[in-house]
Image 1: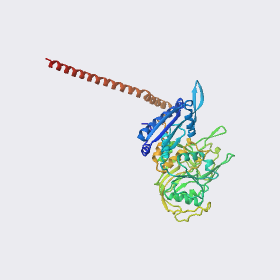
Image 2: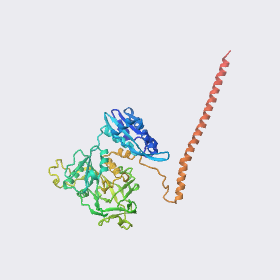
Image 3: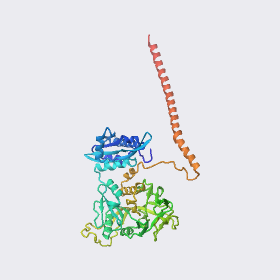
Image 4: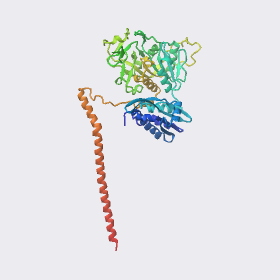
Length: 516
C-alpha cells in the first residue's frame, strides 16, 4: 500500500524465482551493532521482511538464512565473511552521553548450484530488491546484454578519469568490453555506451554506424562545445567538430554547438568564501523530466555541466521522446563562450526559453554510408571490416548533450548521472522490470506546502491539521470502530446465549412430560 509497493516483491522478481530449477540459498548476515543504530536497525528489519517475501514467492526452491553476529561470540565466522568479500562500514553509537564510531556489516551471500555471489554491504533500503535480483540473475547464469564502452575524450582515460563509472559498469555487467579507436565493434555487443567523440576517425564512425544498422542500441553522451579548465581559473569553450556529431546530424539529431544555462535552476559555486551563481551548470528538477518515459523513471534530480541542447529533424520527431529539458528561463551561448565564474554574478541574458537536453529514439534509420565507400582504417590498418555493409536498420538511441557528467571529478550519486545511465541501458534492452525496482524505496512524503498560494501561517495551519488527523483522529476512529464491533459482538453473543438457554428449557420440559 506504500508508494512504489516497497514492502512487496514485484512481478519481475516472482518471474525470476519461477525460473529456478534448483535450491537457491540466500544468507543474510549483519552485526548486532546494526540494531544499536536507529536508522540501520530499520534497514535490517526491512531486509529481513523482504527476504521472507522471497522465500514465500520461491516456494520450495528459495531458502533464507538470517543471522545476527557478535564480534566476541562469532569472531571466526565474521573473519570468514570478511575474507569472502563482506565490507565493513562505520556506524556512530552513543553510550553514556558519548558518541563514538564502531564498525558494522550487513551483507548477503547467494548460493546456487555450487556458485556464489555476494552483496558485500547494504547500508540503505533503496533498491534492495534490484540488488538481490541482479545477483540472482548472475548466479543462475541468466544471459544479459553484452555492453561495450567507448570513451573518446581528449586527454581522458577510462582507467583514470572514469573510476566510478568503471566500478558501476563492472558491478552491473559481467566484463564490459572497452573499445578504442581503430578496432571493430564485436558482433556479440548489443549495447554501446559512447562518451565523447573527440578522437574518432572515419573508420570509427563507420563502425558505429554499422553497429546501429544491425539493430544496435546506443547510449550516446556528447557536448556540442568542448570546455577546458586551466589552473589559472580560466574556463574556455570551443565548438566541438567531432565526426560523431556529423553522423548524428545525418540521422536527424542536431547536438547544437551551444552552451546552455538556466537562470531558474543551477548549481552554485563556492569560491574564496563567497557563493557565486553559475547557471551554465543547470540542475534538472523533477518537473522537467518526462514522467512517461522509463529511461528517466524515478529521477528527481540531475546536474549537468556546460550542456548542449538537442534539436530534431521532422523525419524522426514521431519516433523520438524528449527525456528532460531546462526551465523556460534558460539561455544559450552560441558564439562567445564566457564560462568563468565571475561572468555570471548578475543575470543579463537574452534568448530566454526552454531547451531540450536529452532524447530517446526508437525506429528505423538509414546508414550514413549508403552511397559511400568503406573508409580506410588509418589507426590500425591490419584491422579491416569483414561483415556485410547494411543500408538501414531498426535502432534504439538515448542521446544526451553532455558528456562531462561522467568524469570522475564531476560524477556523484547525488547528481543522478549513473542512475540515468543504468535506466537508459535497461530501456534500450527493453528491461522495464529492472527500471521499476531499481528505484524502489526512492521516495519521500514530506509535508510540503499544501497550496502554492497563501502565507506561511496558512501552510502551518494546514500542516498541523494533517498531523492532527493522521496522528490522533484516525487512531481514535479505529478505537471507536473496535468498541462498536465489540459491543455488537457482545449483543449477538447474548442473543445466542438466550436462544441456547430457551432451547435447553424446551428440551428439559419435554423430558419431564415424557416421564411417567
